Amino acid sequence: MSQSRELSLKLHRLRQELETLRLYGYTEIEGRLDEGWIEKLKAAVVTRAQAKPQEEMKRKNAAQGAEGLAPIRKEVEACHKCELSGTRTNTVFGVGNPKARLMFIGEAPGADEDKKGEPFVGRAGQLLTSMIEAMGLRREDVYIANILKCRPPGNRNPLPGEVELCEPYLVRKIKGIKPEVICALGAVSAKTLLKTNSPISRLRGEFHSYHGTPLLPTFHPAYLLRNPGAKKDAWNDLKMVMNKVGIPVPDGKKKNG
Image 1 (tube, one colour):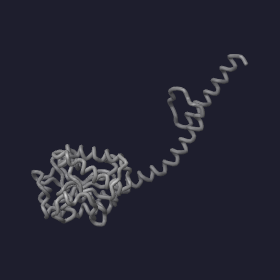
Image 2 (cartoon, rainbow, N blue to C red; image 1 turned 45 degrees about the horizontal axis):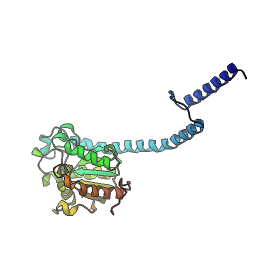
Image 3 (spheres, rainbow, N blue to C red; image 1 turned 90 degrees about the vertical axis):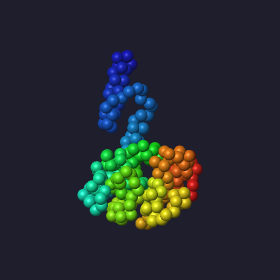
């Protein structure tokens, strides 16, 4: 076979291969193709095709979940049941996956949260994000909220009357999200939700129940910033949460939950 004929055949095969790649959605190719690349490409396409319905279902569930929370959000934004509505900059409804398996709940927004209208965005929020990522998750995978939706002046603790008026919004939200586990962040959140005066040192380390949902108290991120030595105990709490939800623990050590 002449060199020109051989070159012509190679070019023809190359055009066929490139056309096949274009059919599968590839517009730019760099480097040398491995042997058997067509079979590998077909297998990858089949995998993507199988995963697409699952991804579509997740998006659909998230959209339905957001729609389910929308009426509650509107009520919160228009709420003037207590005096906090007169001093707030923004209501702080909550953020995250409306169909989350795990929900974090603090006691009330702070100055940064009041300004932005989003929970846990200051230094404590950055630490909470790091804690969530250490679990192998992202903020958008979980749901983050507070008991109160408006900032108390001077970041004081919620008053009983404020909790009584605002907590029903939280209960309705939990019923809509249906998390498998709630993690109460800090002594105030844990004691308020569980209606107890027991210290956080006694409450953490075991699961309780909040309106039928397992609830595990742990230290507030702001407390951990002031007391770094407590981070190990907080991580043990998070490992209990991971075991409860079925999330693999990074270090492979499991603690009964």
